[in-house]
Length: 327
Image (cartoon, helix red, strand yellow):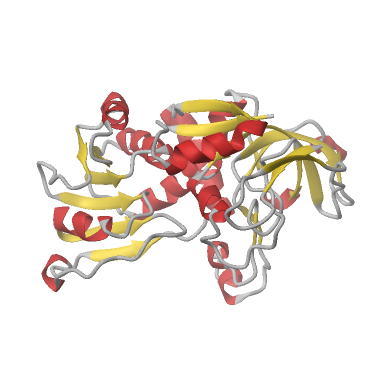
């Protein structure tokens, strides 16, 4: 197999050849056909997440077919097209797992962070945490659904049922969440980097009723706002755009510090909440809903050995939609 490995914090990924991985009990090996490039991968590469054991293969928006089985896995699964998400496994016995909140598990395994991920030709995954994808849709278009879509869905649910929804950061997750929100008959207000005309055009083409810079005030008070960009200063900006009783949902795994702000923009029972990871039920619910909604991802495809270039474009805000690696 071939993989893009991260040898140490802040270094460039290296294209290497490795022995093919062997699945253990309860595991499957997946021959990868596409892997999305997520902002969380940047946080891994840049060392912004704790306790990374190097070397590591990033990537957790994986689409491929099962080509080898560990002990206890039915042979009927050979050849099945599956998606491998960020949540690679959970302990099953901590208080959160017992309460049905496996996204908060005390001892989780994360694809592309605490176990090797999808910037490769093959990976091994826990069969219980793979999603069957069926045969409809192109692999490269499905890949961003495995994290950008899943987190977009979970954040949309946490935003509540308000009609007027602000989306701050209109990248991979934002452009998927916007389509789901329009399917739910919500009004979408898209906020982008100043001068990012391409992202604003994409937002409007996907049904947003307004698009502007993050510093702009929308033409209406928002019922809720979701922040996908990892920028703490967006929190007080979003609070100022909310109606009383509204909610700001911070959807990233990492965010820069939130600056101080006057209590008056939080008062009125406004709320700030965060989204942590996902559950398998999130995946099941989202994939069914995305198919009904006819979600289409806007992707730019890169060869596997150009993962560094894709990450650089993402870091610099030069991508519209999502980047996907194709081995």
